[in-house]
Length: 156
Image: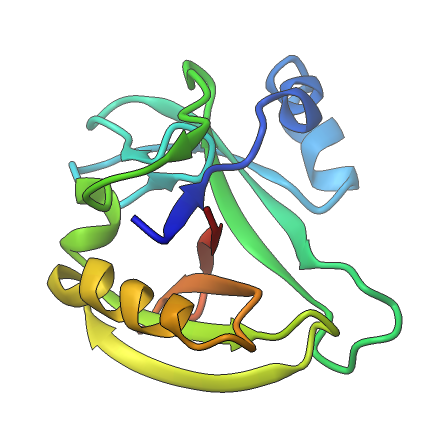
């Protein structure tokens, strides 16, 4: 493999789990209970929440370089029972492979090289192709219909 997919670490989100609903609302976050399988993809465990599972929905800055016009943040789900997935080398997790995805390809200056919408089943092939390109530094993986950040791929 020429790349690895990185999940988010758990530590920055644990403070939200003990907050009341009003405390969450005060920081622009919400408690969420998954109402069906496949509707709440956790960015820490890289797996979907089961129906009835508790999560928090928070805004997360996923490209923070103040010198880049592409700096960005958006809503993400984190399961209260999440275990960190860490870096994944090998086939993309099912959570990514089963969704329509938007790939945003960045160079070392955090400038976007390209963007494309793909069927998640082709994620491994598309990432391999992008990391064959010498200018590619990282690829942000988003859920195509809503644009939410899912994970990041970096050169292995």
